[in-house]
Image (cartoon, rainbow, N blue to C red; front, side, top):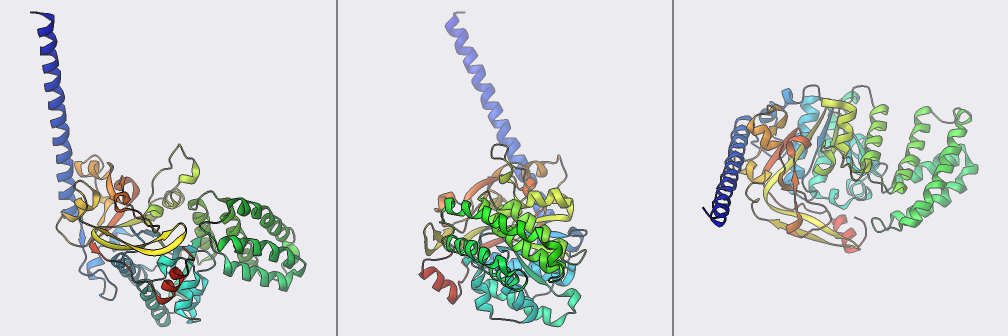
Length: 447
């Protein structure tokens, strides 16, 4: 046999082996996908309604799922999906009325959310003004207004121990905090008021330009904030006769959040720290809902190439609270959603998506044929084919508030590692901005 014939036979054999290996791989992928589909059908909790006000009969199975859970990270696959906001509203209603949750922490400004809390807790102020003053345009919607109205009505009917408090976690707007720190200094430490006014004016000027602020100027503000907070801490004993411990702590926390904003190193760790502050200053045992984007609530490990600033908020919460933190993401198959041109601030934009691509997470959830549902991913058994599919990377929606071309709204996600559960809604439509939100966007300001 010639060497040429030997080579040809060897190449043929290798080709057959590679073809068989590829076929086996495809068969294995099909097997795990089919197993995941069967598992979803067996474990899904169908939702009869995706809006609040219909009782909790179809959600009662979640009572067992969330037994022992102290913090629910309630994610949203897009900030601009009407049905996403409304199904989250329904879940908040369930968590409050059936599970004893009494605090909501929003992905929005730590201090500038306070008018929203005043509105739902005490009936103070104007709902429209409170929605707008928190400064985050996606939350300034008619759907979010429905949630605030429901919370206000609920708080009117329950004793103080069951009233729901509303908090912010984020860093980039501090109007309320600045005003309260200035008023505090004017009352108890007037000699520091001029120092505070100077640094606050500089920070306010930069915040008005966020996210397009001058990072060089912002970095220069932090040392001045350090001087202010250090001076207050140094005179803590003296000030104890003029302010309560809780008031003093709150003033220091307002300044701390301003310092966080000037660090320019990401949001997850500061938001986790701010939640820690809120938990420490709430009643012992208070249960929290963390309302944020899916990207924040996931429990993924950090990327070793980018360091600690790549931690998800949910990753930090899982490290701190273990399984008493439950990350509940949302997904959908098709529809439209609202977003905005943000660099520089511009108009609203509507994204429109057809059904999810084959093999993706939303495709798999949709073909279960159940409709809208919740599924607890913790019940998947390690090592089973369904578990393997859930813990492998597949495309999932990853929609930012800043407008993206439709070709960029998917990213590979290992949902079994990221989330404890998923709320699936078949189709969504765009949120409805309030009159004030329309004015904000028309003025080309805000985020």
